Image 1 (cartoon, rainbow, N blue to C red):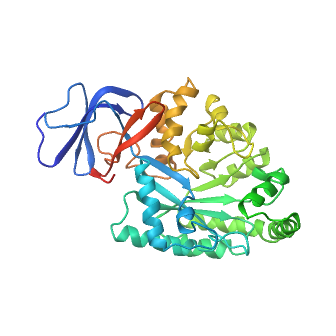
Image 2: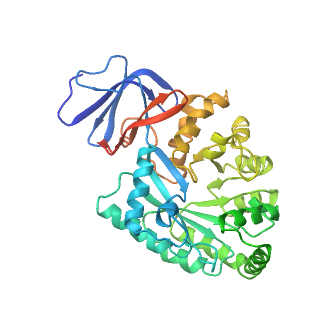
Length: 385
């Protein structure tokens, strides 16, 4: 095969396809798309990958890491576009070529510097994108805290944007879902809120109970209707009980984020709902909040998608650890949890696997001992990192 001026070929690589790994192969890219895949000796003039992995670019459905760049210290607000660019660079060098930026779509006095700023951050993402300043392809994931009084209004301002690809239904009222143990929620806020007293938390929790009673039912109905109106897939969050699973089925949920029990995960799986778990959970060997371990779900065939959640580099590390820790999962299947599966869950059918006609979103990964190192990143055939 002779190369034309419009082609780029990456050769001498372990090429990870959706269903198998080519131990020595090459990938040809033409006009931003994958044109051909081959085994054996590479065409003359190919870029030498030196035996490294060539994988699809990683696809991230749930990361709120932008917040750490926008508010790097309590009460310290960074320029929002500069924050987006910094965050984007971290994602790209972690191998993430498509991301759904998770924005908090609600306001609650006295709980976070970030809440109530979703529209501003969405505009900053759009401005950086329009200016050609971003390496990854950015979409939006609207995180909707259902009991909050402002959630419907704030979600309505954003849901019609063409870059909104997912809306999640969340309820962090004390005593249910992730925080069935109210003591764990108190510990969470003591650590996150700079040492709140029990008296302060009593006031916060009472307000949360009141919000749940006054607003949750109507808000849930309106948020679901809003998602249906704009054809946006829905995600549930922290499903725990059989009742949570029944609600997810009734609400036509596409993705279940972070189920907390094996019973909930089994029910969701049986209903055909994709299960998303945190890659940090895989890397650490368990949940930081004491819920079900992602590896236990993987061993039972109940894990579909990984998310980096709060550590961007964990997405690649967690995926590549799966075959080592769960023998029934091979490398191709592990990589699907961070590429093809999340792409399909939100309707991004043009990416997520190395196959002719798909976008040439690719990453070259070198394995240094137990640590994967991203050496090169291409988005639509253009090197971005």
